[in-house]
Image (cartoon, rainbow, N blue to C red; front, top):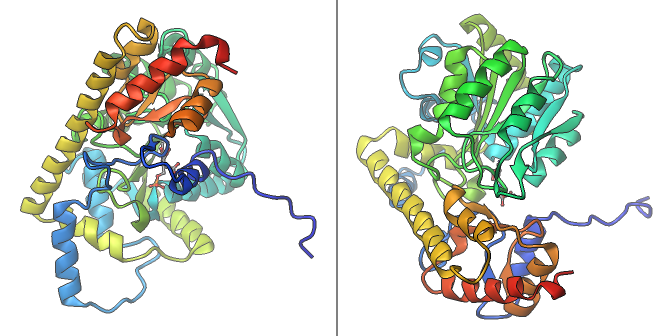
Length: 403
Ligand code: KET
């Protein structure tokens, strides 16, 4: 029956992470997957999460089904975190928010919704974007196109080309934007660029679809969501996929949310209903545990403050590792390759290393980056950063051996 099923080539991120786990070398360094590791190289279990978990264990509550749209307290807390507690659209009941299986689940549920209710609309993603964007959207039947984004010459943004491309899209096209800490490049729009782009989306009658998987890892929780709030203020039709995987360090609990900002509360109710149907037809309803953890932290002032401060120190630690790379590489690589460690933001730096150089880092030094040259800076620490600097200097200096 299944003799003609071809082999799965594997995923460029998750399969590489599995290769890393199997690598027997003791000095190996995992800079591949977008996960935050602490100074000791471990995934943090945040103290506020531990406190809620202890109380859940104590209560030993029964495990019924959640509603299809998810845990009510979680949905409300997730919405408030994305839009700000007092955003007008929120107070007016114009935002439909549902609990999803991570940020990925939000992308998939929204993609199913778009495919069913706006079948003529195509989606545009940045060039480059997170590899799985194309996979999820094409998997849901959408046609995926790209708009210019990254400039390999400068390690920065091709903003004019990006804006011009978006300014020429057909009405009702969907534009996927990264709220902050762009994956894979670490290159974000600044405030002035958002202010220039938002009227274009509005005028061209486009739908903004914002992926926010790294809220709190750029400049701060509110700062990182500023573009989402400006889009909502401007009345641009808006879909937001958000995730607690990284900022709560709850990867395996699959905690995400999908929010759609509508014109009025009635439209929001109808959209919520159709999104609920998309969930029912995919996996029926979401799991309880992670939702209770997140809702428990966000609804308690003291735990929330503890979480925010722990997240702030994670953000600071990433910045200090960026500084260490920048300092360490002085005189060893050219300035364009070096400056990006401090000019780019969030978990990722697009190193500009070639595929051949990335392969040498893995084969000769046990240092894992994505083939695209993306480095997860959050995998660096005081112990390994010097080793990574030296290895990059070695492979970057030997240009003849690049391919
Ligand atoms: N969006 C973006 C931009 C993103 O980087 C990730 C995960 C997700 C969504 C998915 O989030 P989740 O809540 O886990 O469903 N990115 C990292 C892990 C992965 O590829 O799955 C990464 O890029 O390494």
